[in-house]
Length: 255
Image (tube, rainbow, N blue to C red; front, side, top):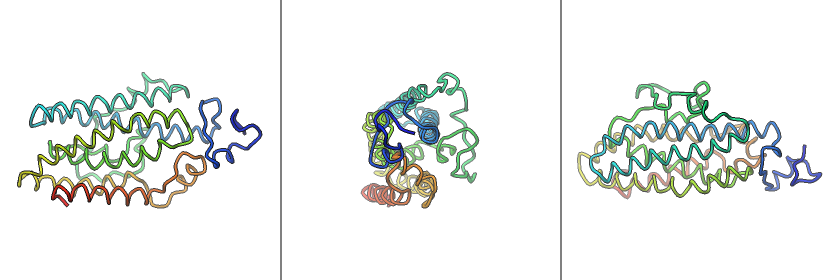
């Protein structure tokens, strides 16, 4: 199968050479399935993240923190809608999609959640766990925020140009979300009791966030790489995230 941009070149060769697809009409079925899976995972994770963080607004210790939590809650929902708008081009019903799952639903803290998606809900496994307080919310926001930056930077170079463009626009706002978390964590770490709470939350969230990058070796990653939808393997991204997270936490005396 070929696209308008490839002429007579097989689409697999076109994508392998860094080619871009720009509309649903040019997308072959297998590519479409993988692309929609990536989009759904992003949308579901943003909706679940927004719903979970909404509860943290009333846990905020001050006005500055309340504003930051409100901003993160609002903008994550907006990010989900932007990608869902792209999914509409493939026939997704946006109104029904929003009602498909209870985005605020969480399991108990000690439940072992399989990193694989749960039923039709494509959120990352980390978004099935509840937040237990303000410090816990801030720590999770920092660690998952850093992971999100690595993931979005990767996908902002993907071969489906409309998706890449939207993620490129979203990336600076997600970076600001993480920075707001770091600012909050710095204030928490200034207190001895705050440092103790933060370290307990870090110990809880680090292994759970690490799982969001997926298995070190994956046949699916190879398919995505061949399609130009991914470029960096999971383990390389996980190691880079962990190094960045440890450096950020170490600077706050939380390593």
